[in-house]
Length: 148
Image 1 (cartoon, rainbow, N blue to C red):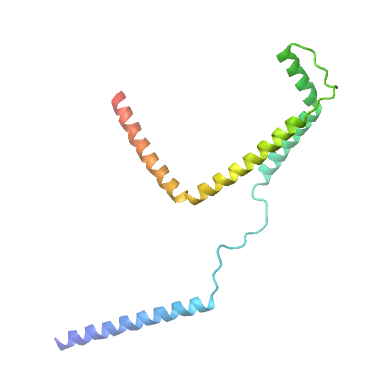
Image 2: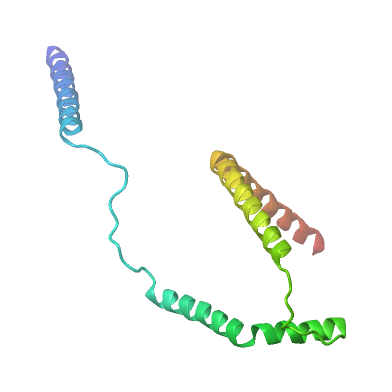
């Protein structure tokens, strides 16, 4: 019986020394290593094929707009109004530019507000989307059970 008590005491001492050694190692690591968030990513194209396709697409749109833009607008206007429209007339587009500028500023402000709201409420939105997924799955199972 004395042997068992001394074995327990020795095991407890070993456990305490292991615990102290672990904390000393942890303190050593924390004092010598500086942690940074993330790591520097190399500057490289990740998808060069899609970049080429995208630039080709944008170039095609610009080319078609330059070649057929005004004629396409004239043809569309002729078909919708039934009148022959002269595209060489001086037309005042300042109201259109003001409207486009105002709507662009409004969309920037609304996008910024929505980004802030979504960033703040991200955990809540994730929980709601998971709950919605489970509820919709149960609804689909129930619906198909009724249909059969």
